[in-house]
Image (cartoon, rainbow, N blue to C red):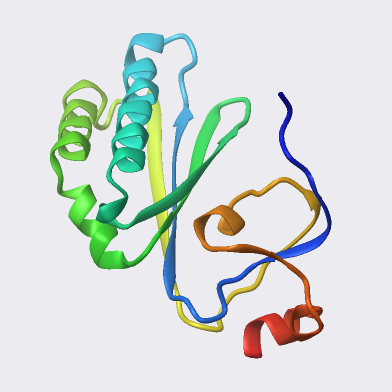
Amino acid sequence: MGVKIFNGRHIANCKDKEFVVFIIGMRINQILKFWKWLPVFNAMEPMIKELHQNPEWGFLHSEFLFSWRKVILIQYWKGVDELVDYAHGKKHSYAWKAYNKKVKDNGSVGVFHETYQIGKGSSEAIYVNMPKIGLSIATEHIPVSQDTNTAQKRMNG
């Protein structure tokens, strides 16, 4: 069974929504110290699973990106308050404490995050011949119309 491709032009219908884009990741600085970075990597899956099981917490969607030494998650949230509440929750707090106990400042693995609060009318997205991805999963995936056929129209209506 393959991924469904939506032929033509589609958008993420997010003009009238506020949301948060949260980018979080890790970088393996010392590849041979797998006992340092593997637990950091392994901590991600239970947290993402927990978020998908509890949509009332404000989590909308996540995308995984892998490169040679980095794993990056792009997450979409309903708001900053929901994201902060999760950051102080049990699974995340446990993972953060484990990271600080095992790695902290030894340099074997790095972590980072960036948070962007997006106001109504401050974003737009278009997808051509693509499966649903990113913001189109987090919001609403719809075909382009006369009212949404340019980036300017998608952002400013």
